[in-house]
Length: 445
Image 1 (cartoon, rainbow, N blue to C red):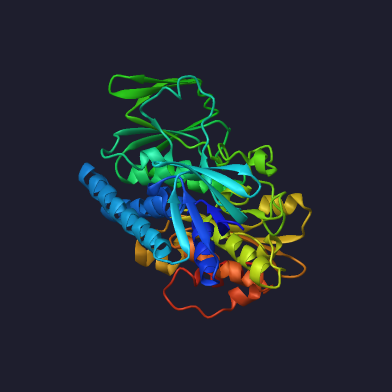
Image 2 (cartoon, rainbow, N blue to C red; image 1 turned 90 degrees about the vertical axis):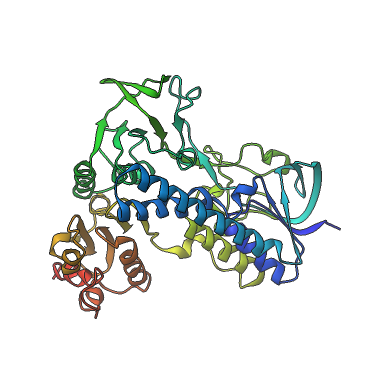
């Protein structure tokens, strides 16, 4: 007899949704979370919700110390409210026990939990790992000792706007923070190890993004060769290929790695890959049949909506036909909340040509969209890649206002197997950003 029918390690999107569902099926469920400040997971506490709240307020109120302080205060209000709501949603369920503490496997069916009151051991018939990901720290001399260098979580706790902000890493997370802090009035410099921005994007899109951010006051150092980080009185210095620069704060945005350290997975026979992610099959089972891994920890795309879909896959495996899998997702869209936002789905033009596809390509400047004129923001570029023979949409990239909403329309059309002509000839209300899809695909012919 096990203590619980399900033990879930990690209070993230997939885990919390699964816990509530299993409790509704009459299961005894233990939800183990290492930090009371992380009820609800990464998105609510240190990811999507706080950053997008700040992006919104930066766009609305603009530069200045007061605007920054007000935005940070509202960010805390929003995250505190959602964290407490998430806790109550589970703690209020009769068949769910929320346990604070750090989990580690003892064997395939038991975990130890080290909490404030000491150590306890729990047994579970099934165990679900949902511990998310943590920030990577590159091997740069002095970085670990620096008190003015932050990951994205630490930077979100600042109470005073840095007049000068350095960012190591020109990826999507780094660019979101660069855009946001530039709007708050910080002088931002991005150090990128590569010779150009966003290597996975088409050059016309990446160059347009760079130009927009440069116009907003963001400086870029390519082939930066950052050698050392050292704290000095009142700031932090970055020693790089081109010299030394001083900042009030430094953000390290070098990506995120699966959070498996300390779980003692080997004791349970759970295999991990070279990145530390739990190896799973298409239905998210680990190498141990009664142990699953959901969300960022399994090495898949690190998005909240992927974590939610992970829950759906596990739910179907336990209570449905058992046919749903990661292969059912189709092309996965993503959005980067710079201003204006950037979203993409499917193949880029370069990727399609590398695959030898016969394609048609259309680009549309955002300035051609009437709604963009109404909103007073004509920056950006829209791009579509279509199969020349079948008319199927292979990929779309949108850099414009409301791109993060528009991309979901394209996702629906692609999943339904609709030809590009359906969006070309679709009825959209006017004036909206979505109606620009008429014009974009109209350029295909």
